[in-house]
Image 1 (cartoon, one colour):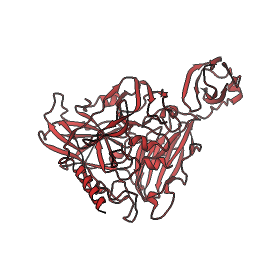
Image 2: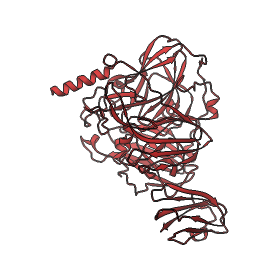
Image 3: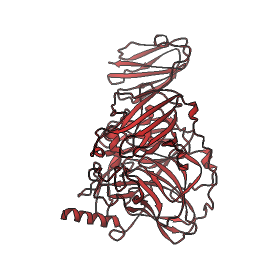
Length: 568
């Protein structure tokens, strides 16, 4: 007991921060822009606390990764090299891309390999992010430091009078908490995440100009929700949610942000020059049942291993201190009254309604420590939970039958929240979303439109974004497929592929009824290694490929066909 009290005293002193170690300038991640991006996932070390060194992972550096700035409509090419000595993936969280480019668990990157996704940016201006997504290893890789922001720009956002000078009046804020063990090393398998940080900076301080300033906030933590507010209790304005601008700025003095969610905030420091204030997490106000509250379950008798004692749970704490300095020459003097049209999908036009129920694997007092299920199923890489026709409009009812809140994330397309327990969602939740926090015993209805991308072989994910829950199986997967056209083209008349097995040259003959097709060749890990477009008859040179099974995907005339090819 004496040792525990001493440990808590040390934690409290570290938590106080200012008196013990002093503050540290907020680290601002570097940026990359254009259409060609190179990311190397690598090991490093980082000093969270003075005089200490912790092993970390990062992209193009020791921890976190550069902020990628991309434009809607651009076609971009990314090269991701895996130098961490462990298989991983990189998921472009929130971006609407084809499943083979999404970076889910099926698109793994082996140690030493380079993954080369290519896609057209189809998303609205907002703040997105990237992080690993390998099944059973997501929490470990993210907690060790692998994540970064993506800023999408478009003509609508550019037309508004908003700050966008990165690191000057437009700041990225990656909010996280970690548990450091007695050797100052990151422990990713603990609920005792006592050390808060922003952009991997503990006790950070940021000089901000006395004017309107924009903050792009990501909750990049493994499990903790933050209840954001300013220490002087003044209003701030939310202008964007996960996947797009809101219709108009939303004034508030609190914002509950769960893991995976993003928000763009505007704060007016114009009358605060030479003052100091803080961005706080008012966790004392978080209701029971949310990781970060005093009680992680619906009542105090529901326990979570290592959740207590922890000085952050149910207590207010500082995330970031602002020091307000003079305004710059390009100060924004007012906030736009209108941002963009927000047009949710019409539920009367839906094609299908689904119900997804969340439940613990074991009921009873220990259910917070049990694994959680979706529709009584734990995730399997070999099970496709849903097959969704391209262009389907669907409503999903998310029914949380557990005593703990779950932030629910869907890959592929953004969604709109239609209701919470039958009532309209708050105004700031009526924009484009890709994560929604579903409270204990709550029912949330969302609407999704599955457009543009499809692949009958590679699935998208849906899952809880509490990363230990995801790793332990609170996840499912779906494929989007394109139905055959009214004039049916059967497999035999669509194409012939021979010889199979093949040693050197693979011959493809397309039916006269089939025009131009796009083709892609995937290896056994579903990594794309060749692509092109052809018509009639054509050959593929495969003699240089390693022996094994490959998948040739042909798409054209409203049909998709995949051939498994054995290269000898």
